[in-house]
Length: 385
Image (cartoon, rainbow, N blue to C red):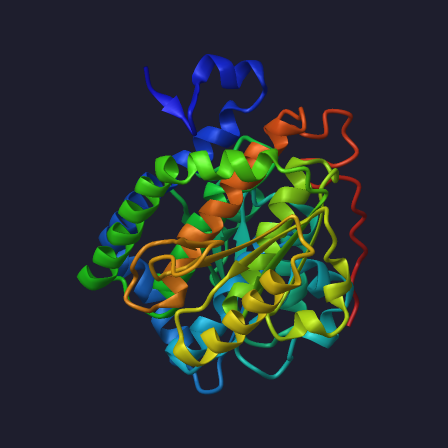
């Protein structure tokens, strides 16, 4: 009988956790399907993107709300380095509330919107406001819902292009998992304009690594989830800071706030936030494969381990584990951007398992409805320049 994260479908359905487990598990398959689809439609995508990305002084704004915003934060540092473009991660929640502080009227701008449903109030409003503020504004929608407002908007607009993620990525569970990684992967390939055989090989390699980790990591993750921790601290440098933010949010969401979470960079953590460490804290570090950055990550890992205050200190690394508390995430040829996928997979699996350990239904940890899968209760006010 096929199992998901070590559980049968019937058991998961009884625990209100089937969708979350399924959506975490099917990510490697979706990534392969995604890169294949991007290659098949490359000419269409390039016809829209190439003229925009070749404009002098063009700015790329990666936007979304919540997890969708954190996808941009996780990849913006890499995209800046890989393309030489001005790439900024700005949440739709910031664009909508303070448009003139985050948008530049006279700078040609490509707004890349990450949106699972494409229906959240801020996602829709950010498009309209960007068009009002920026004189030369274009939109790339990376969404998982072909029936969402953003997907419907694109065919009717001369300055917008929509790409739908593979079927199954429109997560039915409360927390975004496969939608997050699929949209992140699409943006990496499209903005670097590197949808080719080499890119597909890298994606397939990472997918195979993650497929193996789904079973390999499960016993360890069950042990970690069984620890009596009430705080989760996730740390990472560069793009891993944004990834840490998403990892911490997953645990906060799936524990319905029972596990309080925070995130920081390896160097930033000592500047006050280290006070969050106590005997009820679990610390996870995403170690960089860059030799220079890794020194700072390693120093903090050693310090936290020697402090012996936290319930446990875990470090994920590309390398084979060299000491207690270090976990190998797979060889990706020293490219941090590809480590992002096994790293976030680990965090998703832990959040799911901790949710079960606490007695929550991961598919809907807030059945009373104070927090919703698609945000509700937001009033969008008319913006006038």
